[in-house]
Image (tube, rainbow, N blue to C red; front, top):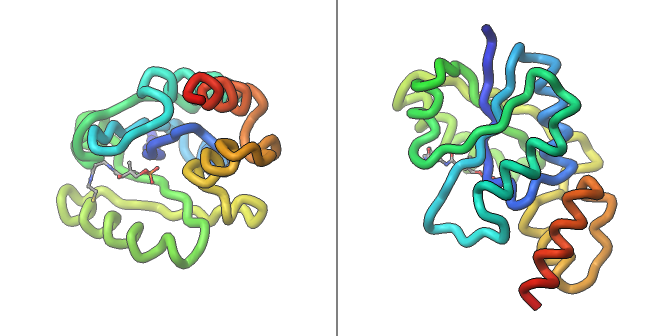
Length: 160
Ligand code: PNS
């Protein structure tokens, strides 16, 4: 089976992520969207919440599954017999760091990274920016699925 992992923080999932997930789902027999846990990174949503949101918005694709992992991505790939990592590239500025990670991951276990270009309408989109705009009352309704926006607004209200 051609299985790929699409790793990230997903705090929270955006329409930009969904664009990549949907297109990857056409290319691979199975796509695992993996929430990578980074204890040093403060997140708005805990890992269970992030997975729940991802399951909700990816249920339209039968071959997409959601999981989480604490540790090296290459170890997740090895344990799950995954030979391809999918990453979205929004702009040239993403490339330097993504290339460095792809080369490191390849050096570690031989796993390959496949870059998919973001669709132009999402090329500026990042969860961190969405959170910042929403925090100050900006309109983020076109950047996230409606259910995710509701949860984001609710979480921000709880923190106010
Ligand atoms: O959504 P993000 O925060 O840009 O995703 C980055 C992520 C989680 C994909 C990356 O930090 C990662 O792969 N972390 C797992 C730990 C790891 O394998 N580190 C070595 C990378 S070479």
